[in-house]
Amino acid sequence: MKYKNASDILPDSLLREVQKYAAGETLYFPKDEKRKKWGEVTGARVFFQERNAEIRTKYLQKMSIAHLADEYSLSVETIRKIVFKQD
Image (cartoon, rainbow, N blue to C red; front, side, top):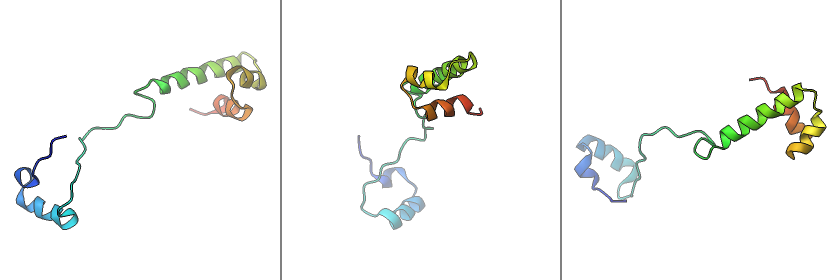
């Protein structure tokens, strides 16, 4: 990362205001980007959405919660949360 002198970039009034809070300190200004939601970059969000939809479908096809818990290696309580979640 290349450092730049704030006095070369910021207007004098803004520079004086920043100096009130952080004179002589090194500051990092992040880019103005929206952060991605959890799992969007890795694909985990989609994976869990598809898995949960599959669990709901199997439950509607009369598969028991205990059997689903064993099949997906999840607790019975977690399966209940997935099955009965109101979207």
